[in-house]
Picture 1 (cartoon, rainbow, N blue to C red):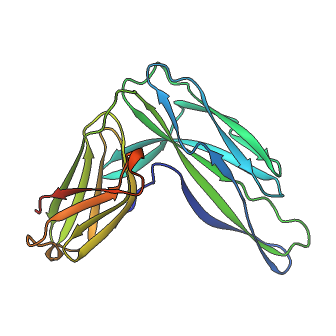
Picture 2: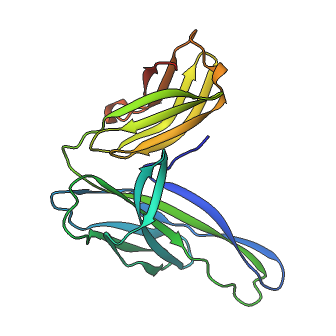
Picture 3: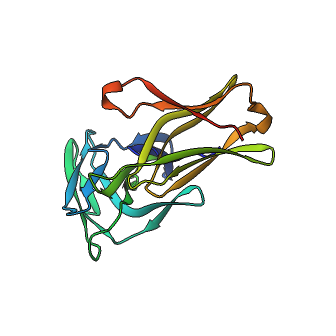
Amino acid sequence: MKRYLNPLLRLTLGAALVLSSAGLDAQAASLQISPTSLRFDLAQPRAGSLTLSNPSSEPVTVSVELSRWTQADGQDQFAATQDVLVNPARFVVPPNGSQIIRVGWRGKGFPASEQAYRMTVQNVPGPSAAGEGIKVQVVLKMNVPLLFTSPTAQPKVNWTLTRQGDQIQLSVQNGGTHFASFNDAALVSGDYKASLGSFAVLAGGLLRFTLPAPAAALTSAAPAQISYASQDATKVGERETLTLALP
């Protein structure tokens, strides 16, 4: 089953091996970013900013990359873009220091409909000092959504279950003008439960999930229900549920 990006902040850990003479040491960059997403008004998308903090006792070299975020063929798609300007794109955050990252629109004219981008902030592993031995440096990636949208835009999400041979496929389509996000989503039917994780469906976007069980696991004896954490700020900790027609 495919999982999709959390619309807020997602951390991805990898490892880079830096070889030296002897011994083994592990080092992880410690970075914090605020806010975890940026939204711009389509009518006048002025520049915004984020603050990257380094609470560790070592300097951290950081690189920033931008991608256009779309959804096609039921999946998230990312492509290089020059629509958005980020400054600086590479820098060093001193120990217990911080760096402001400025973001702004530089495309030709303002976009007519909601546009989504992803800013990837990543520490750059440095070389080992002489005599430090074999050092494992953990690469930390932070994916920050950038959304150019209208205050009046609204999502319009449709959930559909279909049979694909012996499998069941869940399609989540957004025919509205604003993205929709779902956290800790799950499909339940009787004793059957499939976790969908957290994901966002962009304006005009479509995501598909192939459920990890044969179609026979879903029967007409029990309705299929989708539940997810409420998006209403006044209902923190509650879940919303909707019932789907079985194929």
